[in-house]
Length: 212
Image 1 (cartoon, helix red, strand yellow):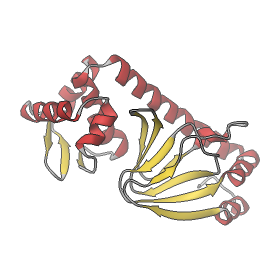
Image 2: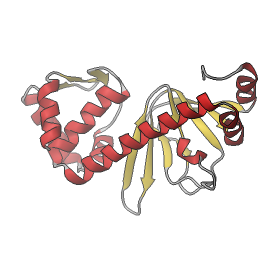
Image 3: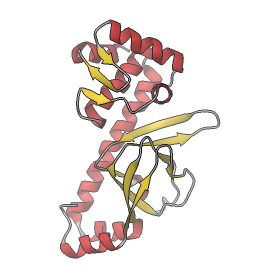
Image 4: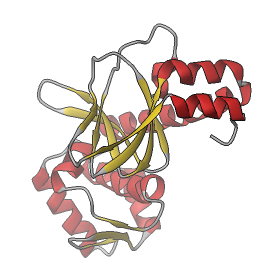
Protein backbone atom coordinates (compact mmCIF):
# COMPACT_ATOMS: atom_id res chain seq x y z
CA UNK A 1 0.00 0.00 0.00
CA UNK A 2 3.06 2.26 -0.05
CA UNK A 3 2.12 3.55 -3.51
CA UNK A 4 -1.13 5.08 -2.31
CA UNK A 5 -1.76 8.78 -1.71
CA UNK A 6 -3.32 9.88 1.56
CA UNK A 7 -6.82 10.27 0.14
CA UNK A 8 -6.58 6.88 -1.62
CA UNK A 9 -5.37 5.22 1.57
CA UNK A 10 -8.23 6.82 3.49
CA UNK A 11 -10.73 5.48 0.95
CA UNK A 12 -9.28 1.97 1.18
CA UNK A 13 -9.30 2.05 5.00
CA UNK A 14 -12.92 3.24 5.06
CA UNK A 15 -13.92 0.26 2.89
CA UNK A 16 -11.87 -2.36 4.75
CA UNK A 17 -12.65 -4.72 7.60
CA UNK A 18 -10.37 -7.17 9.38
CA UNK A 19 -11.61 -10.71 9.94
CA UNK A 20 -10.02 -13.66 11.72
CA UNK A 21 -10.69 -17.09 10.19
CA UNK A 22 -10.18 -20.30 12.11
CA UNK A 23 -8.28 -23.34 10.80
CA UNK A 24 -10.29 -24.99 8.04
CA UNK A 25 -12.78 -22.12 7.71
CA UNK A 26 -13.88 -21.20 4.18
CA UNK A 27 -13.06 -17.58 3.35
CA UNK A 28 -14.65 -17.38 -0.08
CA UNK A 29 -16.70 -19.88 -2.05
CA UNK A 30 -16.27 -20.85 -5.69
CA UNK A 31 -19.23 -19.63 -7.73
CA UNK A 32 -20.16 -16.76 -5.38
CA UNK A 33 -20.24 -13.09 -6.33
CA UNK A 34 -16.97 -11.20 -6.02
CA UNK A 35 -17.20 -8.57 -3.29
CA UNK A 36 -13.72 -8.06 -1.83
CA UNK A 37 -9.99 -8.18 -2.41
CA UNK A 38 -8.27 -10.03 0.42
CA UNK A 39 -4.99 -9.11 2.11
CA UNK A 40 -3.53 -11.91 4.23
CA UNK A 41 -1.80 -10.38 7.25
CA UNK A 42 -1.26 -13.48 9.38
CA UNK A 43 -1.69 -17.20 8.79
CA UNK A 44 -1.78 -19.44 5.73
CA UNK A 45 -4.46 -19.69 3.03
CA UNK A 46 -5.01 -21.98 0.05
CA UNK A 47 -7.01 -21.26 -3.08
CA UNK A 48 -8.47 -24.20 -4.95
CA UNK A 49 -10.91 -25.30 -7.62
CA UNK A 50 -13.58 -27.60 -6.24
CA UNK A 51 -14.23 -30.84 -8.09
CA UNK A 52 -16.86 -33.53 -7.66
CA UNK A 53 -14.39 -35.81 -5.85
CA UNK A 54 -11.08 -33.94 -5.49
CA UNK A 55 -9.93 -30.34 -5.19
CA UNK A 56 -7.23 -28.78 -7.34
CA UNK A 57 -4.96 -26.55 -5.25
CA UNK A 58 -3.99 -23.43 -7.17
CA UNK A 59 -1.75 -21.61 -4.71
CA UNK A 60 -0.74 -21.27 -1.05
CA UNK A 61 -0.55 -17.74 0.32
CA UNK A 62 1.53 -16.56 3.29
CA UNK A 63 1.75 -13.04 4.79
CA UNK A 64 1.63 -10.50 3.34
CA UNK A 65 -0.26 -11.53 0.20
CA UNK A 66 -3.13 -10.21 -1.89
CA UNK A 67 -5.80 -12.71 -2.91
CA UNK A 68 -8.49 -12.23 -5.52
CA UNK A 69 -6.67 -9.97 -8.00
CA UNK A 70 -8.00 -11.99 -10.95
CA UNK A 71 -11.46 -10.72 -9.99
CA UNK A 72 -10.51 -7.16 -10.94
CA UNK A 73 -11.12 -7.70 -14.65
CA UNK A 74 -14.31 -6.11 -15.96
CA UNK A 75 -17.15 -8.58 -16.34
CA UNK A 76 -15.52 -11.14 -14.04
CA UNK A 77 -18.10 -11.06 -11.24
CA UNK A 78 -18.01 -14.70 -10.14
CA UNK A 79 -15.21 -16.39 -8.19
CA UNK A 80 -13.76 -19.34 -10.10
CA UNK A 81 -12.04 -20.75 -7.00
CA UNK A 82 -12.55 -21.10 -3.25
CA UNK A 83 -10.23 -19.91 -0.47
CA UNK A 84 -9.74 -21.65 2.87
CA UNK A 85 -7.58 -21.09 5.93
CA UNK A 86 -4.93 -23.75 6.56
CA UNK A 87 -4.34 -22.30 10.03
CA UNK A 88 -5.89 -19.43 12.00
CA UNK A 89 -5.54 -16.46 9.66
CA UNK A 90 -6.12 -12.72 9.91
CA UNK A 91 -7.39 -11.13 6.68
CA UNK A 92 -8.23 -7.58 5.61
CA UNK A 93 -11.24 -7.50 3.26
CA UNK A 94 -11.29 -4.49 0.92
CA UNK A 95 -14.50 -3.67 -0.94
CA UNK A 96 -13.70 -4.37 -4.58
CA UNK A 97 -15.25 -1.25 -6.10
CA UNK A 98 -13.15 0.98 -3.84
CA UNK A 99 -10.07 -1.02 -4.83
CA UNK A 100 -10.89 -0.57 -8.53
CA UNK A 101 -11.43 3.16 -8.00
CA UNK A 102 -7.95 3.53 -6.55
CA UNK A 103 -6.44 1.49 -9.39
CA UNK A 104 -8.11 3.75 -11.95
CA UNK A 105 -6.73 6.89 -10.31
CA UNK A 106 -3.23 5.59 -9.53
CA UNK A 107 -1.33 4.07 -12.51
CA UNK A 108 1.68 3.09 -10.37
CA UNK A 109 -0.55 1.14 -7.99
CA UNK A 110 -2.37 -0.47 -10.91
CA UNK A 111 0.95 -1.53 -12.47
CA UNK A 112 2.03 -3.10 -9.17
CA UNK A 113 -1.22 -5.07 -8.94
CA UNK A 114 -0.77 -6.26 -12.53
CA UNK A 115 2.74 -7.41 -11.67
CA UNK A 116 1.46 -9.36 -8.65
CA UNK A 117 -1.26 -10.94 -10.78
CA UNK A 118 1.31 -11.99 -13.40
CA UNK A 119 3.48 -13.54 -10.68
CA UNK A 120 0.51 -15.50 -9.32
CA UNK A 121 -0.36 -16.69 -12.84
CA UNK A 122 3.20 -17.97 -13.32
CA UNK A 123 2.98 -19.89 -10.03
CA UNK A 124 -0.30 -21.50 -11.06
CA UNK A 125 1.13 -22.43 -14.47
CA UNK A 126 4.04 -24.08 -12.68
CA UNK A 127 1.58 -26.00 -10.52
CA UNK A 128 -0.23 -27.33 -13.58
CA UNK A 129 3.05 -28.40 -15.18
CA UNK A 130 4.12 -30.16 -11.98
CA UNK A 131 0.86 -32.07 -11.61
CA UNK A 132 0.59 -33.13 -15.25
CA UNK A 133 4.22 -33.78 -16.25
CA UNK A 134 6.11 -34.91 -13.13
CA UNK A 135 6.17 -38.29 -11.42
CA UNK A 136 5.42 -38.76 -7.71
CA UNK A 137 8.92 -38.05 -6.38
CA UNK A 138 9.24 -34.92 -8.49
CA UNK A 139 5.81 -33.64 -7.47
CA UNK A 140 6.49 -33.97 -3.76
CA UNK A 141 9.97 -32.46 -4.10
CA UNK A 142 8.36 -29.53 -5.90
CA UNK A 143 5.84 -29.05 -3.07
CA UNK A 144 8.55 -29.08 -0.37
CA UNK A 145 10.68 -26.60 -2.33
CA UNK A 146 7.66 -24.35 -2.93
CA UNK A 147 6.86 -24.29 0.79
CA UNK A 148 10.46 -23.45 1.67
CA UNK A 149 11.17 -20.90 -1.08
CA UNK A 150 7.85 -19.17 -1.70
CA UNK A 151 5.62 -19.70 1.32
CA UNK A 152 7.85 -19.74 4.40
CA UNK A 153 11.00 -18.36 2.74
CA UNK A 154 13.31 -20.49 4.88
CA UNK A 155 14.81 -23.98 4.59
CA UNK A 156 13.40 -24.93 8.00
CA UNK A 157 9.69 -24.29 8.33
CA UNK A 158 6.87 -25.36 10.68
CA UNK A 159 4.93 -28.48 9.76
CA UNK A 160 1.52 -26.82 9.67
CA UNK A 161 0.18 -29.01 6.86
CA UNK A 162 -1.08 -32.55 7.41
CA UNK A 163 -0.19 -35.58 5.29
CA UNK A 164 -3.63 -35.12 3.74
CA UNK A 165 -2.73 -31.54 2.79
CA UNK A 166 0.52 -32.74 1.19
CA UNK A 167 -1.42 -35.40 -0.71
CA UNK A 168 -3.89 -32.80 -1.98
CA UNK A 169 -1.09 -30.47 -3.06
CA UNK A 170 0.82 -33.15 -4.95
CA UNK A 171 -2.11 -35.16 -6.35
CA UNK A 172 -1.06 -38.33 -4.53
CA UNK A 173 -2.35 -40.70 -1.86
CA UNK A 174 -1.56 -40.18 1.82
CA UNK A 175 0.26 -43.52 1.80
CA UNK A 176 2.51 -42.38 -1.05
CA UNK A 177 3.26 -39.13 0.77
CA UNK A 178 4.35 -40.97 3.91
CA UNK A 179 6.52 -43.37 1.91
CA UNK A 180 8.27 -40.68 -0.16
CA UNK A 181 8.85 -38.35 2.79
CA UNK A 182 10.47 -41.28 4.62
CA UNK A 183 12.62 -41.93 1.52
CA UNK A 184 13.64 -38.26 1.30
CA UNK A 185 14.64 -38.32 4.97
CA UNK A 186 16.59 -41.58 4.61
CA UNK A 187 18.43 -40.17 1.58
CA UNK A 188 19.46 -37.07 3.53
CA UNK A 189 17.41 -34.64 1.45
CA UNK A 190 15.21 -33.42 4.28
CA UNK A 191 14.71 -33.77 8.00
CA UNK A 192 11.10 -34.04 9.16
CA UNK A 193 9.66 -34.16 12.68
CA UNK A 194 6.20 -33.59 14.14
CA UNK A 195 6.97 -29.87 14.33
CA UNK A 196 9.25 -28.95 11.42
CA UNK A 197 10.48 -29.76 7.94
CA UNK A 198 14.05 -28.81 7.07
CA UNK A 199 15.72 -29.08 3.68
CA UNK A 200 19.17 -30.59 4.20
CA UNK A 201 20.33 -30.91 0.59
CA UNK A 202 18.67 -28.27 -1.62
CA UNK A 203 20.69 -29.13 -4.71
CA UNK A 204 19.74 -32.80 -4.71
CA UNK A 205 16.10 -32.04 -3.88
CA UNK A 206 15.96 -29.61 -6.81
CA UNK A 207 17.40 -32.33 -9.04
CA UNK A 208 14.61 -34.68 -7.94
CA UNK A 209 12.08 -31.95 -8.71
CA UNK A 210 13.57 -31.27 -12.17
CA UNK A 211 13.89 -34.94 -13.16
CA UNK A 212 10.50 -35.83 -11.71
